[in-house]
Figure 1 (cartoon, rainbow, N blue to C red):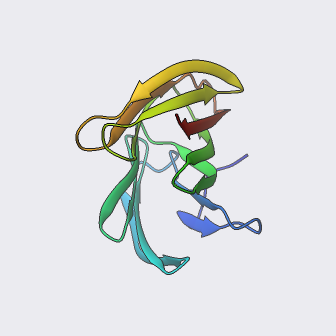
Figure 2 (tube, rainbow, N blue to C red):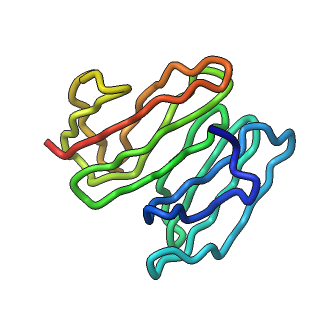
Length: 137
C-alpha cells in the first residue's frame, strides 16, 4: 500500500482513504465532499486527524495512512499503515462498549468515555499495515 498523495479520496468500493505520514510539514485539505458530508484532513509525520462536518472522527499519533475506512454506526473498519507503532483515537457513541479486532485477532472490549472517544494502539513497523475492526457490543 502507499501514502495518499491527494490526502483524502473516495475508493471505488465507496470507502474513504486518507493520510500521509511521509510529509515533513503539516498539510491539510478542507471541504472534501463524501456522501453528503464535508471532511477535513490534517496529516504529516507526527499526526493524522480527520473531521466530518467539523466533528472529530479519527486521530493517530504519529501520522498514519488509513485505507478503506468504513463506518455505519454499528461497526468501523479500516486498514492502517505507518512507520511506527501508533495510538489511534476514534469518535464513537459515548459510554458504549465495543469489541476490538486487530489483524483478525480479538483484543478485547473497550468502553468509550463520556465524550465517545475510543483509544487503541496498533503495532506498525516499516510501513506495515494492520486491519482494524471495531463492533458495537
